[in-house]
Length: 216
Image (cartoon, rainbow, N blue to C red):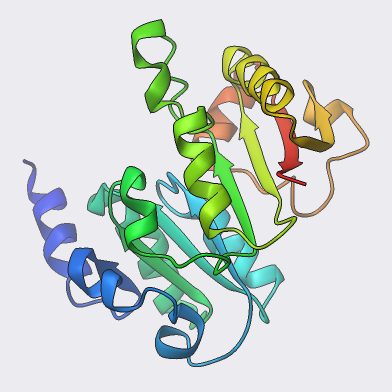
């Protein structure tokens, strides 16, 4: 492991806005009041990477709490450090595997979920690892409030199509969708937030897909 990664792993252990493993389980059901010290809604970004979406959403909506979830601490470090440097209090990062989501959040604790540029897991044998597979959707249903939306933003046409198929099969509700976000009427201030990877995709003329759906 490189020196930079080792330094970042060491540094995030000192960040108050980064929570790991057992410390996160203690907060289950009380993230807003115990960690953020307020009663604002809680929104998750899954597979948050460097945390660009988490931090930018928090800037736009100071009366909502945002938690970025990823297992790679050297990536989380960037978003967490930015939030500390800019004194953005409504941001936290949880370093866990997403498949353990229900160990950290209670039923109806989450208002909204964002999934931004996840690994599409294109191999058929890895379908269960796709973050919009029925396995994961069932987890989201448990922690989301009634009618809480899920947003998927991806450069992967395969994942976009696959997610649409699962939404239809499971009888879920689509609120909005496009296979070319920046040539649609949907590209507002929120959806125009660009991650590091999205900028690379756009530079290579990749289309950006977007889906907003819910369980009711």
